[in-house]
Image 1: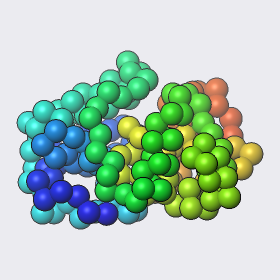
Image 2 (image 1 turned 30 degrees about the vertical axis):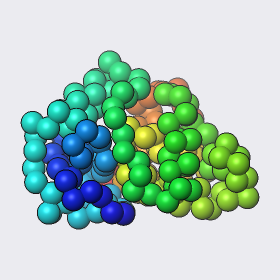
Image 3 (image 1 turned 135 degrees about the vertical axis):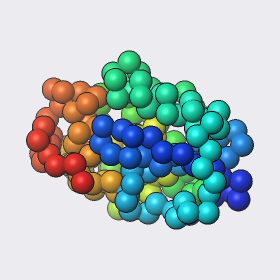
Image 4 (image 1 turned 180 degrees about the horizontal axis):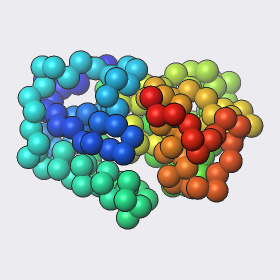
Length: 177
């Protein structure tokens, strides 16, 4: 994943652990839980907690975790992925708060019904966790599978949005990793 040279960063202390936020001049380009798979190395990005987009992202995440917000209204830059990945990430944005869909349903939504594995890989490389809700993608028959930030976080996010949600492998006491 290549991000613009003008990328800046800050961190947000979520209830599920620190999230590294990245932005360019006018758009959010990343949100990764610390240690998340496929996260780029942020060491060369200047820390800019006063950056307006990063401040907005921190506030909206705070509102989300406090259950005062069910959707995000942030300028996103999703151009770091391939056209296929970008199509998957845009499809993730269409999954409503409190619900979920399967990787197969996502594949069908982007017009590639046979590309279920590729869709799963693209979901795993989502650069804007939580905000682009990759946690809402489940395996066949609602199975809790795959999450670059750990299945415990995925389960916690799903239950945060919908405490009544049941899915194979979804437990309220799932460990946060």
